[in-house]
Amino acid sequence: MIHMPTDVDVLIIGAGPAGASAAALLQQEGFRLLVVEKQTFPRFVIGESLLPHCMDLLQEAGLLESVAGQQFMQKNGAVFHRGGATCDFDFSAQFTAGWKYTWQVPRADFDKTLADAVAARGVEFCYGHGVTAIQLADSRATVTIEQPDGTRSSVAAKFILDCSGYGRVLPRLLNLEVPSQFPQREALFAHVTGDHRPTGREEGKIWACTHPGGAWIWIIPFSNGRTSVGAVAEPGFFAGYPADPEKCLRAILASDPSAGPRLAGMQIVFGPERISGYSCAVKQLFGPHYALVGNATEFLDPIFSSGVTLALASANRAAKVLTRQLRGEAVNWQTEYADHVMQGINTFRAYVSAWYDGTLHEILFSAGANPDIMRQICSVLAGYVWDLSNPYVAQPERALPLLSRIVQARSRSATS
Image (tube, rainbow, N blue to C red; front, side, top):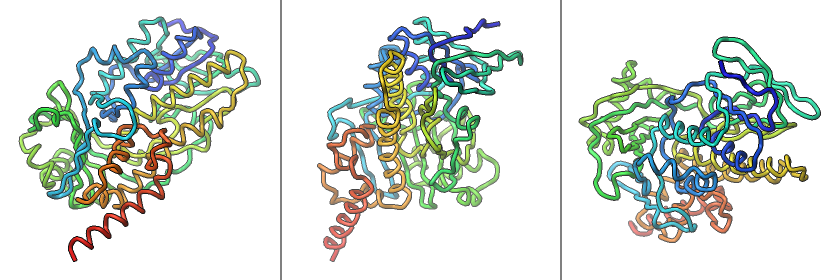
């Protein structure tokens, strides 16, 4: 049995990328930490395609070298397919100065790599431990933790960072959840072999294929020879395919003009699995003695692979604000943390909305799209959603519809 401390500076719920990176940053400052994780690592989770801004954040947390040693597939960009049209983004051509590549990562391996690297520095990780209750007092929080054998114990903490991801521990315990603004969508996904990949620099790019029936498909290649494939749509789309998950996924992939030929020889080695209603939101990102980090704040949609980037970025920000608070400085969690995190979330939200309403499709698949503007959009796809010098970060809700109307007008003019 693990003998947990009964009093810590910071209790971190969740050992995924947000929890591990927050722990890494806070450990560098010398705070007493405890990380509790309901599951046992390694464990499967989706969100396997990183964005280049992750590299900055991993480097700042001192975790980049550990990840680089795993020799994950290098991701140099993203390719969007619709019918016979293609839009190929390469991270070497972007507006914001930053990393030109990142990695495609099996999350079981990636998450364990981060957690193990932080544990090796002396941070206590308690796996198989779930948080069942929380009491917030004037000076600290008291958390009830259930151990693997069912016994319960209490830990007092000056502050709690909820990095529990889809577990959303504090949103559930504190009644912080609110409905998402997005319609309910489902994802059906698997890991396969037999992917007929492109070669050279194009091999590691993620593919996002617009299915003619209204879904979209992801194809994420890994360095271990496997490929993650998935289809995302509203529930009614899947009703038109076989009820059996494998037959359903195979039929969807085969009927797409881009994904079908590439995956014609695939063999399923994991799954298929299905998740539904994954988009979520909360009333607030912080409160007395706690803050929500990563997917515990809000999860949008997998289309632009924003999950790990937002997890690492919010963990980075939370750790910095919390460090100052624990040092006795006055901090403003609204302006210094919540507003900053929501800047990134809202930028991605605008792009997710523009993807599903067709606005972004008009831009991506327009032959007349301005190269300078496409570099600015490329930086968003690279995760640099806090660069307000980029107009497609600063005002995406206004800029994207305007650009869509411009490219449509140019297209009509060219064909008239």
